[in-house]
Image 1: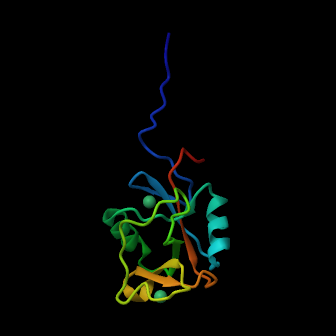
Image 2: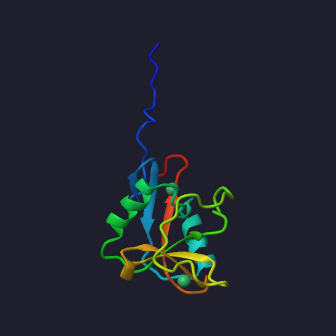
Image 3: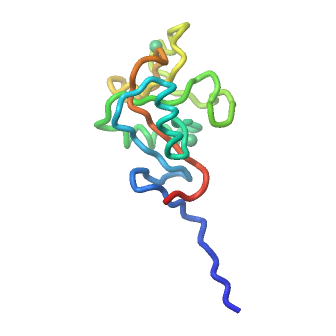
Length: 134
Ligand SMILES: [Ca+2]
Ligand SMILES: [Ca+2]
């Protein structure tokens, strides 16, 4: 009897996502407010990016080059697992706004993190972790 085993070691990402560090990443090209940006990412079975580590942060900074400001998750609680941010890379004097609750990777500051009002329209940066997408 022949068994055909699937090789699940390599993540298959959708065409418009790139695979790295066990996740799939997608740079949206339409600026959206936070709620709409998260909804946009969920269309692709993902979320706004959850930056867990310095390694992931530096990878995204490298690939962000040439992109405008990018919307990441809300910095008080990550939406995908309700944990608080442990790794952070705030720009100087950030976060500085009592009502600015969303993380933006600011292109004028080398994509370091700035808190912005969540209504500000930014380009979604999506991450999906789970499963194989076609
Ligand atoms: Ca992540
Ligand atoms: Ca700010």
